Image (tube, rainbow, N blue to C red):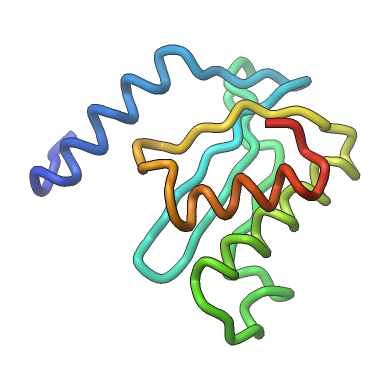
Length: 120
């Protein structure tokens, strides 16, 4: 894998270190977060089967129309994924911050998912 710059390489190393211990199952999937400059994406992943159970992002139809700051969008995404998961019978997840600091949008998404009833 070709890493473009030092910042990406640093996040890649942190991501690999986290993934050594964080694994998702079908009962307790891994909640993986990806943060771009404009959007935020989250997936619930079953690592044993190697498949994504469900996903949500700030590009979803219910969120994209709202003109709110990025942290507020992250909160909406966290609430939406928690509602989808609880509806599907998933009450507990393992949080994978994907090499990002647990701060700002990543923290807002996790806190909103917790408030909506998901155990992290």
